[in-house]
Image (cartoon, rainbow, N blue to C red; front, side, top):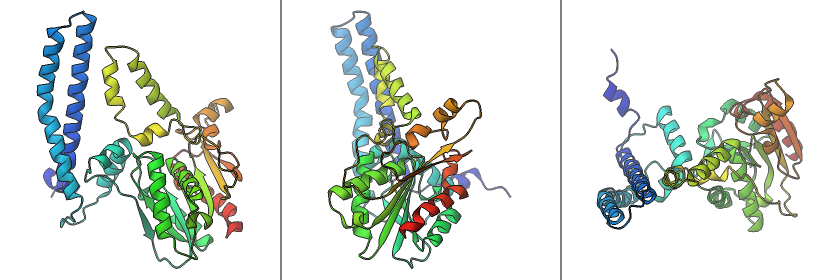
Length: 360
């Protein structure tokens, strides 16, 4: 017998999600009202209809915004209290639910965090399997992903080769890279015990978060920095990504005209994490930075032209950007490998193994 639609839907839904959904609805509603108001006022200005036309319009929209604004404040207060409580509802984190949460954190994560949304992902280290070794390998995922993005057979293969334990980082990818890096530096300072070492392997945004965390740890003379064996970046946009630059370009075009300028309020809703990917890593590594760094880029190899392949790269990050980190000890371009394939390609992990083996 087929499962009723309501039952299938309930499998992916927690009671606290009602608060999160209501928060998102009121936030979106407020934005739509703001945009509509600004477009209305812009049209009045173009028609040279000021005075009481403008004042009356503002007054009407202010009245309309009272309800969603008040509701949003109330919901945020409720969410703040709910976040401090442990729900008695059984764990129903299905793959579909976790995928949606990871995507929402990537797109709106900074706003989920500031509003204390139940869907906000707090940073934590997931320890996989038995923890029998002093050496740890921390795998750091990219935008709109979570710890499940990694291929367990490949991460375990690398750990076995290096006599290390597998750690996965889970975090809110919508926060600014600086915020995530600060949290990671503090987390590793607490979690890495005396006599233990760690290597950081970051995919895409995860490579930027790992690098910035190391720079902060270096500046703060953190203990874990001195016990870091290596940093490996897979498909990391050190010089930014075309997709993020496109979003910035669209925002600039909308800002150029009075009538379309209000719509930038919606484009600006994209998370700080996404915005940060436009620039990648800006700056120089400190001269005393001593952690060996390794970079791997993916190349889809369209065979149309080398220049085109260089621009396409792995489909999301160009070859130039993925290999842009200065003073990188070794670099390699994985042939016929897309951005997501870097997470599970056996040749990629074997290459990392060959690089890191002498460091263990």
